[in-house]
View 1: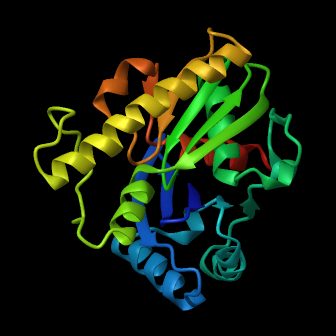
View 2: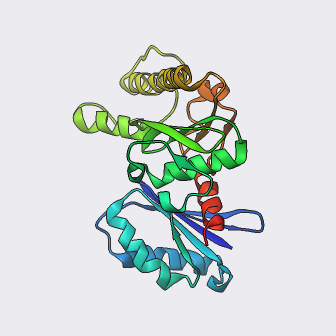
Length: 254
């Protein structure tokens, strides 16, 4: 049994892999100044609720893009589990090389995406991750990460609009039927969601102009299935891609 933990800017995701698949997904809010007890208690409770024997856990893999929480989990994970802990960094990447200026700047979640895409699809690939940030990671079939493009994610964009504009309501992430908004909510949905359809298509086009039109695109992230007009742009939409990358990295680490 393997435990994968992905500390993102919005959520801390915990998943268990055994019997050939991911069996459980637990999510907690990312709170940068929260005490170790907050996360330790929640993980313990979920393990207890699902009758998970910690002695069956053979490895724990941690990815974090939130530096204040990294030492928190380095403290609690050895207390929770008896298994070896692997923290994702450029030093532990199997079969991947980072062709970028500063390898230590790339997010460990993007490393996991690249590892999973390279292992699963075995083709030149652009991984589009619809998370707190919208990211485009370009990786060759040889396992070379050529670079990344980053834009605000869908929720980030809508949240920024809401927080800066007093009269605008909070808006559900639903693609409207028409691009011409008939009310405020419809207008924001059209501008943000239809705008992001164009953003993704344009970014894929521009990246392919640089690296080659043959690069396939793969989508991941919790919001990857919202923008229905983009479905044909991707050979696959895999919400478990990051976790699969963590699993591959963990299994390869000694």
